[in-house]
Amino acid sequence: MSTPVVVLAGFLGAGKTTVLNQLLRSATDVRLGVVVNDFGAVGIDALLVAGWADSAVSLENGCLCCSTDDGSVDELLARLTAPRRGPGLDAVVIEASGVADPAAMVRRVLTSSVPGVSYGGLVVVVDAVEFAAARRRHPELDDHVAMADVVLLTKTDLVGPEEAARTAAACRELNAWAPVVPAARGQLDARLLFEPRPPRQRQLALGEVVAGHPDGPDGPDGHGTHLHALYDTLTFRSEDPLDPRRFVEFFQRRPSGVFRVKGFVRFAVQGFPQRYLLHTVGAAVRFERGPWPRGAPRVTELVLVGAGLDAEGLRTALRACVHEGPPLTDEMAMMGVLRDTEGA
Image (cartoon, rainbow, N blue to C red; front, top):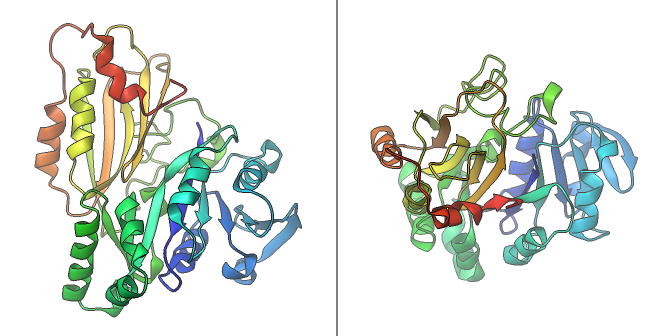
């Protein structure tokens, strides 16, 4: 499995570092690689630095931190994901400078030559208190929100529900597709952005850490019941394969309340018997294909995470993706899936 690289952006004071520190403090079962503008921005002292090596800080909770003061993004990603650093990272989070262009940082990740890493989405942090004033001072903020895969609405605890709703609505006008996720005090469950791997099995084969596996998010050692009460989860299972064209269309029109989908899919196309492991965060969709584990049922199992989900409507839309009858023979039906498949 590749390591997703999430770009965390937002203007100065929006709460990026607070979000990052909250992720680190809550990373009891998550191993993160972090790239920051400078070490001082992250609460290193509070997290107790265990040692220094190659411009990287090793935190006591097992996470690693690099500074962008020296070296390119590729060099830092290679340093953080080097095999000699032990078990694989669950994800890398890059905190973009408050004056940086998020699009440029995203391009650097997308064009990275470091093996084993993949783009995990652009998360733009928006200050619910200062959003209107920030838009006047920084017109480019509208562009940042418009290109986001996920919008995090911080400081919602400092404004009333009506003001928070107005800010969320303004963000949706700029980006009708990306989910707008409240993150009061910067609190965000890491599992909303990426899939933690079981600590004892971080290098598992494809698909063994998704819904239904004993160590998956809904298994006895998983985290399916640990999501913050603010978020909803929905599961979907089908023993019949899915029509890839309908499934891609579902993703193109799925409601913004769905900001993460994880699981594995079986498609009804002749010549494509593999299992497709699916990860999405916001608009970023990624498939990884591999063999079905010996003895595993060849079924589609998905977990959808979001806020205010219309469970019945989503299940109806997913059931409409199920293919009945003989396998499809048109390989072009898989083009939409292969476009987002690693190694395709």
